[in-house]
Length: 342
Picture 1 (cartoon, rainbow, N blue to C red):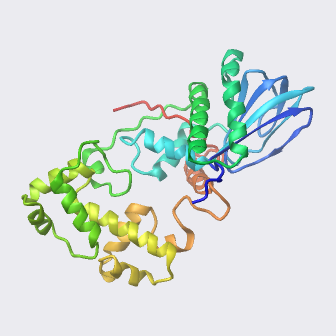
Picture 2 (picture 1 turned 30 degrees about the horizontal axis):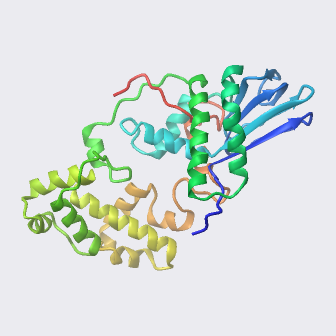
Picture 3 (picture 1 turned 90 degrees about the horizontal axis):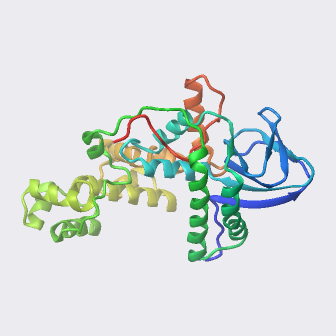
């Protein structure tokens, strides 16, 4: 594996000078931190100055630029939209059923196309070395250690910015126990407990041959447990029941075969242990991957796009904004705070 990859979820650069940054729209979130001097905002906002210690947080697909007043220094962070929404999802698993819901919620929480954040000069002085190192690390190839160091730097910046981001209060109820139990898609509801030997034995059986028509009573017999005991032990170890776990394995193998081979979907379905005509494979695949097997073959995962990362997130934001009669593409996902928390 190559160790020279770049951190594609975020790119940072620092510019000093008098040159105008012409208004343009990008399919990612931009954070422009003013480190010296002042600049006049342009684009889909009122022309106004921001100065040292201020930052402009710009949503995807928003036309934005700025013109320095004399000489100014600004560090611009370009943040992949899907990356931010992924963290929104993981941060609040008890509230958000899937990543599509996270996109919709981000659009409701952060409808403003642009926010000016007043970080303050003291905070800017603390962030200065962090921003400088982040610029350096995202300009060059990275090994594993460099990648995680860049992530740590980025998290430090987001931690400093998040308290200043305005949001619209949204009351969101926690997921019910039934919704949690029914979830097949990752992430599973891990309890971070040791895996019981009986559960590990059953998991190994299913890994060794996912095509077998495994039944709960057969698996329980291998584990020398009753069906109810196995279900409890397995869920405590892996977060899902044995048969849901088997479905996950089959869907993952289906996705691999769709990506790596030209086999017909019907052939792939039979190869992983499902009957094509029953419809079980399509239902499970859609539930786990978010799209049907045919859609996955043609277009990839729901957030994938030939236009680049973040486009899928924008489509989710667009539909949510249209339903709310708001301008298209105005969603910033940095932090979630809801009216009701578990």
